[in-house]
Image (tube, rainbow, N blue to C red):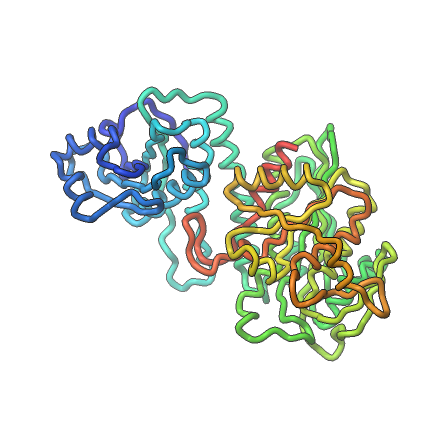
Length: 491
């Protein structure tokens, strides 16, 4: 999709679809008034007839019948706020892209309303339009029609493209393929996305210009004493894999470790989930998918950081050889965990990745995991929980998430809750009490990072969309990719 910038007014720009963001009381918007004069009052008449109030997320499409250079006008409600936030632009552009697909538009013109800062709007608008173009048609007998959109023109009177706008547009274009890759990995059936498949995809997409990939099989995993991964894998016929993705630029200032949970399907093991709860459990490797997606874009973005991704991956299934409640796992850092619930397996494999990462002494460690239903109870489906032992790291991640439109909310590491993790036979249990499950899970992970600065993102809620969203169809969202890439580009 070609991105263009134009100094032109709304009533003069040619396009298949002209998208016009409007706030409360749309008939008072000067740009809309000028359009309406050219349309002989018919647009205002339609606004009144349809009771269009410009509430956030509302739309109204109107055919211009040849009275304007644009074939259709799309009004995008932005709500009553005096200031339009970045995510408001992102969602509005996504809506415009979806409407463009509905009418088969090839040229979309998007008005950067005078009330906003055009420099701040460019990145989110381009990003929203791109993210809304994603489809996963691989298994449909009747494919959904591919997007016909060839160009997106950002315009307003007096607009002058500058370096900041160009950078924002290019960043959005660079991020989208990483998000799409993560979505693809999550959306594949679990019989396809096995541990071996994840390793193959990492090798396929993370190569060249400073990127390299190692994939360890069972023998190397045993040699490295990655006991948590081996324990969870015991019920499976699929071999576990441990994926290491390295990005080494010529002059690295700092070193960052990323750790992603790669449970390719979670049945709960012997602590079996109900059938309904298993329906979407292919999403349990969304943390791993986000890291593969993000790292695949690092050569394009060129951060001056050494970044290493650690991905322990297996499925979690019941069988005669599966791990049992009461088993004890001894990790490479000497810590031991008593397994009382085999459905609390993500923390068991993340502990391996965190301990291995901490041994390399990076400047910081960030892990991403669809870890707990408790986090979803606390924050819902659109907000990820973030924990950490270093407040500046947490603050930076929250800020990057806000810029990306990926909401993060800090939850506490309550040291008193460690009492609930005490085991009679090991250093800790893998589950706590009935409440605060997201916190007790994070406290377990903290035991494996040593003295490193660390942040844990529990993405159980936003990793998978149960219904279509503005920027994403139902399925994998690729949550975390854009936050990570903004973090790594600015660290």
